[in-house]
Amino acid sequence: MFRKFVLPALGLMVLPAFASAQFEAGNWELALNGGGQVSNGTTSDTIGATVEVGYFATKELELGLRQSLVHSSSRNASSQGTFTTNSDGNFESFAQRNGEGWTGVSVGAVDYHIDLGRFQPFVGAFMGYSYTNQDQFQINPDGSETKLHSSSWIAGPEAGLKYFVNGTTFVFGRTGYSYWFEDNNLSYFTVDFGIGFRF
Image (cartoon, rainbow, N blue to C red; front, side, top):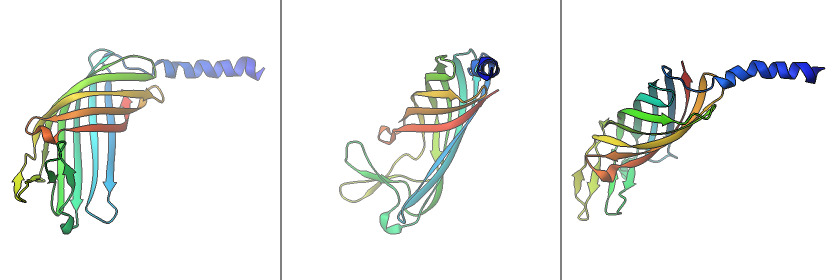
């Protein structure tokens, strides 16, 4: 009897929550993600977070705004801060020699969702501005330094997947490529994971 009546009844109660686990025109979305990196007794630590707000003009098309803020600190003068190597291998750059700093990124995005119920893959593009109070330098072959652009307009493609764990809450993963208009050598790939809420 339990199998015959109770299990189907439970299934009917849960079904509406799963059936509504998708976006509709007029929905709003609030999403959060964050992360950090702690070095093993050497140069730099970072911690940051992103807040995102989106509006669905249709059930597939989302218009969004995102604000990211990352704080970093560098403590070992002998290592000269955080090093990165240029893609062509010609120079190294560092964000800061010592001390603390922050970086902000403000962007607008447009994403198109494919409605697969609880699974919502999406593709889109973003554009915005990246700014910081940290200086970056190029180390030239003769040992001299050339200051690089610390801030720039950025834009790029993105793609990802949202998965509804219930009718209003989802987790997501997203990857993209941020092209720096001021200096393409500073362009980078991004990967984000977070949680979001539909309302």
